Length: 155
Image 1 (cartoon, rainbow, N blue to C red):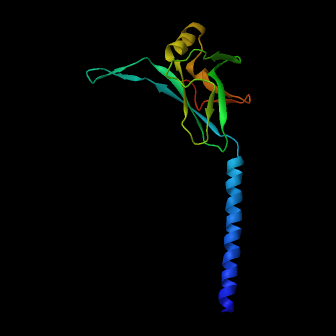
Image 2: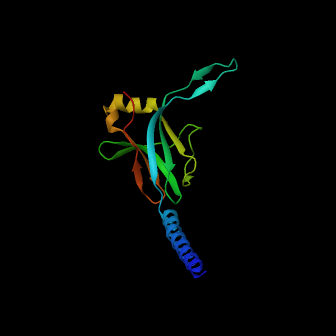
Image 3: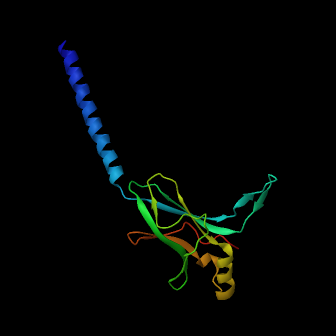
């Protein structure tokens, strides 16, 4: 009988130790700040027609912004970084773009930010800025700027 009591006590202590260990790990994950990813892509919306067919819309360059961290973060601005520390700020995005400011919750739905590809082509033509030198970015409420995972994907 004493052996069973001893084994029960050992099991209880091991269970409590594991609960404390994993509980602290969970607290650390929850206290961890936001981890923001900015994925840059080409976007061409399609519109369904009354006859069931689809029609492609205008060409856009988009940024899909997600938060995989432990705390929320607010996007307050976005644009395209240009050479010489210049910025192209997007002030009038299409109506289907995520409006700013926007709160990104951990593990929540991503924000979709877009700029018409024609505006970027205009910069390339008139100012000679190569697409590889145009880098989308976002700005968070705390002033942090996060660059997209690649330059503008146009050629």
